[in-house]
Every structure is written in structure tokens, then in C-alpha cells.
Length: 467
Image (tube, rainbow, N blue to C red; front, side, top):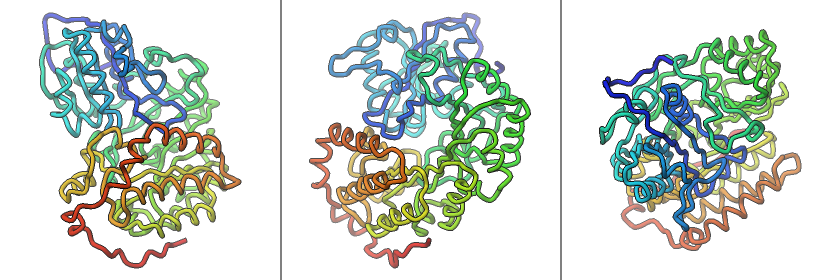
């Protein structure tokens, strides 16, 4: 491990450290219970430094019971508690930090993650130190120093310097618990979609691990009995030549694995790549489709067309790979008609799975800045910023109407006879309703104030869809 702290000290401490990934109040998109990678990298670096480290992911088991005020005992006894937050987990992360402070005033609390990167001063109200951006190069300094305040993380230039994450640090983890083993091979994305927080966290320049580094990790995991993987890269095929070399290496080393990934629809332009994906065990590709409304695709800065989406679904089918089409609904170019057209599109082209999210203004994104400047955000309860709640004043819907349309799309799609997951979908929708009774009672009363209506154009023109 060559990543070193950016400070030097004659006195090296070895405090007891707990690192926590809080859960969201509701996460219907994580049925597989996949932990995030960032806090596992940090824990592994600290372990190699000699610290007594434990990682906690509340996607596996909760560590905090707010009504009873109970925290995991080992966390209370820690000298340092690190908490990694995204926007929908921020409230719970802050509650955990406050509970730690109450139970152990001497504990050093460090907060990082994408939400803390966007709003570091807010996070600092609950912590001794906030680390923004990528924290691997600063985590030893953050843990071992007595400094307070906000420090800027340093982007890892050579991803091969990062360690292979130690899954044994993950409390509650056991072989077989994760149906897909997490692995990451790149960071960054140059496309800068208007609603996406990736570029704020990881930048617009792609950085890749070497193929040999990834293959060595896969071989090590396979030998340990792990055969199913999810590649966490935001765009697994960002560099198609490099991806082909990686897949050829899997074949050359005879690694018998099954895997899933996220990608853009432009993977369909390369039949050789798709053939290699199938031959190496690719099961499912999650596609950032976002919309089949051409105007919405332009709003989102997606640089793809409806015909590109159709071509990708059909090409994946031809290669025996399942498509998961991920949609983000509620742009200023969306209407009830465009959402109905989306459902018709799905019935026609029959992807295996679909995911429907509400357009959410995540802090740090261009979309958030635009909505904030226009006064179109009606709540900053971060627990609602999870893609299943409406938190803005949409242009062509009331908030209640947009939520109804999105939930209706879920119900219609997962009722189709060739779609897997009907029972799970119904269960999640019912569970969401139970958790959000107060929100559902309040939402119909949320209307655009006059000053907002005046800034929102009334007409969006012809809504006819392609395909």
C-alpha cells in the first residue's frame, strides 16, 4: 500500500476505529444488500496501518436504534468513529454522530461521503472533521491527528495503489451473505449528467485500475469461493479497448464467474465487446436509460437517442444478457403523456427489468443549483432525497401527481407477464406506503407558490415519442 498520509508525526497513535455506512429510511433499489466500497477501502488502509478497525454497513444490519437510543457497544467504545453519508442517509448519519457524541464525548467523529462533499459545513455541525472527495489519501491524517475542520481529499491518481478491500472487516458479513461480491475497477465520468453527483465526488476524468490488478483480485476472490460479482464502476465499458482486455484476461485465466455491471447504451455498438461479456459470464447490465422522451434526454445532457436505447436492449437480448433499464422521471419536459409513452415503450421492447426513480436535486449537482435558484425545492428533509419521493415543484405535475405517475409505472411494468419480480415489487410498494404515511398525507397539500409558478414556463410543446 503506497498511499501515505500528507503529514508527519513523531508520535503515531493507534486508536480503535469504527467506520459506518448508515442506511436510508427506505431503499427499494438495494434488494441485494450491497455495501458501498468507499468505507471498506478506508478500513482496509487503516488495518494495514495497524489500527483496530471494524466496518459497519447498515444495508446488512442496523447499528443504531434511535427510538431507544441504542448504539452498537463497540462503536461507543471506539476512539474514532467515521461515518460515510450520501444525501438520503445524511439524517441518519448525523443522528448516529450525535448519539456517539452523547455516549462518548471523547470520541473523534469524522464524516465523509458524497453529501458531506457537497455540504461540508452542514456535516461539520455533527463532526470534529469532515473529509471531502476521495478520502483514501487523507484518512490516516484524519484518524491520527487532533486537527478539526474541513480537509479536501485527494483524488487517487493510480488506482492500483489502493488495497484489495478486506471484506472480513465488514461486521455481520459471512461468505454467501452477499449474493454479488462488490468490485470496482475505475472512477470518474466525463458525461456530467445534470442530476448526477458522481462528477462532484470523483471528477470528469476516467481513472482505471490496470487489468492485471483487477484480474489478480478476481482470482484471489474466486479461490476464496466468491463466484458472483457486481462491478461498481459507473460505466463499466467506459474504455471499450481496456474492457475487452480485462474480459480476455478472465478467459485466459479461466476464471469461472457470473457478473453484472452498469453501462451506457453505447456498448451496443461493439458486438465483439458484447460477445466477450457473455462468454465471461455477464448476467445483467444496468443501463442508464433515464428517459425515452428525446427532450428529457436533452435536459439531462445524456448524449444518447431513443434509437440507441432500443438498439442496446435488442443487442443485449441477442447475446443472452438481461437489460435493466433505469429511468429518472419528472424533468421539465415530462408530462403524464410521456410517462404513458414510456410504459408503452417497455411493453414493446421488453427489457427484463426496469427501475423508476423520481428526479431528485442532489446537493452538488447542476440540477440542485438550478432548482434552488428558482425556489423549486419545497423540502430539505434529506431522508426524502432517495428517488422515491418528490421534493421539488415539478413543471407539469403537482408533486402528488408525479409520485402517482411514477408508482403507477412500477405497478404496470411489474404486472407484465414476462417481467420477473412482481411479488417483490408489490411488497416494496406496500412497505414504502407504511413507512411514508405522514409524507403521503402531506403531499397533496404541496402546491407551487405563485412566485414559483411565474418562473416556470407553461408549454412544453409536442410530446410525441420516438420508437
